[in-house]
Structure formats: C-alpha cells, structure tokens
Amino acid sequence: MIFVLDVGNTNIKCGMFEDGVLIHSFRMATDIEATSDQFGIRMIDFFRYLGHVPRDIDGVIISSVIPSINYTLDHMVREYFKKKPMFVGPGIKTGINIKYDNPKELGTDRIVNAVAAYELFGGPVITIDFGTATSFGAISKNGDFLGGAICPGIKITSEALTVNTARLPRIELMRPEKTINKSTVTAMQAGIIYGYVGQVQYIVGKMKSEMGGAKVVATGGFSELIAQETDCIDEIIPTLTLIGLNKIYMKNC
Image 1 (cartoon, one colour):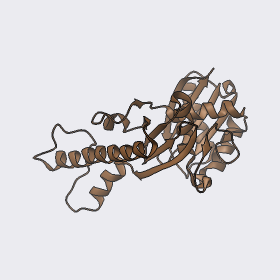
Image 2 (spheres, one colour):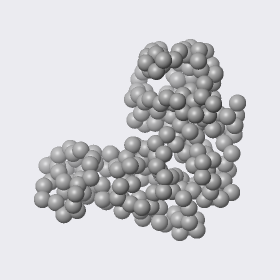
Image 3 (cartoon, helix red, strand yellow):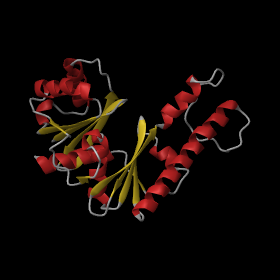
Image 4 (cartoon, one colour):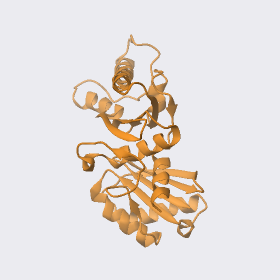
C-alpha cells in the first residue's frame, strides 16, 4: 500500500493506494508548529479508524508547498512508518517536461496535478486547483508543462472583502438564486461567486486561445461550486492531486 501526502497551506490531504486504486483518503489542518510526534499520533489515529496499521504501508510520497514543514514530516514518516519518504522536487521523474523559466519556483502541487491530468486525459489539458490560491496549469499535447496563472482563492477573496470594510459581515460561500439581490449577504455572495466564475471563464478562455483548445480538469474544495455556473470545466476530480502523487511514486519506485 502506498501512502501519499499533499501538504497545502490550509490542509494536508492524505491518501492510501492499493494496486493503483485510492481506497481511503482523509485530511487534517496544516499546523506548521506541530512536532513530528504530534503529526505521527494523528496519522496513527486516522489509520486505526480506517482499519489499518503503519506496517501496511510499503512506501510514502509527499508533495509540499511549505518547505519549513518538510523536515518534521520526514522525521515523522521515518519514526512512525519506518520508511524513507519520497519528496516531489528536483530530480524526481514525473513524465512531463517543465517549461518554466525557473523550475524551482513551480509549486509541487501544480506539477502533481499536471501529471495526473496528463496521465488520465492526455494533452492538451488545463488544470484548475481551487485551493487557498487558485492555480491554473497548461500541459501541451506532448506533455510539456507550459506554465499558467495564479490568483487568490475564493475564500481569500471573501475574507479580504470583510477584513477591509467596516460594515460588511462574514458570509457563507453559497450560490444565491439571483445576481440582483436585496440583502447585503446575498449581494456579497453574488458578487464573490459570480464574479469568480467570470474570472475563471476568462482565464480558461485566454489559455485555450493560446493553446489552440484543451480539456479542462478541476480539483479543490470549491470546484463543484464554480462548475455549477459555467460549462468551461469538463471534469471535476476531487482527488486529482492524490492520484498524481501515486503515479509519480510508481514512476520512481
């Protein structure tokens, strides 16, 4: 069984693969102050809940956008799973060519999403990851990662509106029935959500124009909310990053 961890700014998403199939997944909050023992005990609790023990794991791979937490997770895996974890980074085989000006600047989550999308659908393909930040990635027909775009996530957008105004309240991010609304809360929901849909459509349209067309694959917590209002997204795969991590592990094991 392969254990994969996707370390994001807000959550650590975890998955357990057996014979290439995702059999379990869970997530925990990203806590940069936590010790390796705290992470280890939390992981063991999840494993017990799912009916597994650490010795069931044959290998571990980690993608992280927070370098400061990597040593802690490395120590945790060695101590609690008795394995040397594989980290997505320079020198690892991915099956795609990175056409970034400085490949070291590219977030590993974007690489992993690109690998998964290209393996599943071929190219050209566009990935959208609706996370803390929303990232767009473009992969060519030949498997070249061409680059993309990054913008504030929808949750950050909502919080910025509240923090920087005196009278606007915190709201639940849900789709209102109308664009023209008669309450402050629904007016904010309409502006944030429908405005974000317009942003996604415009960026995808520009990327497709530059690429000559592409399939669009979305992942992340808000992908379904946005996809309800636009037909520019072809596929929604919540576990896209976990799938990509497993595929990268298999290329390097």
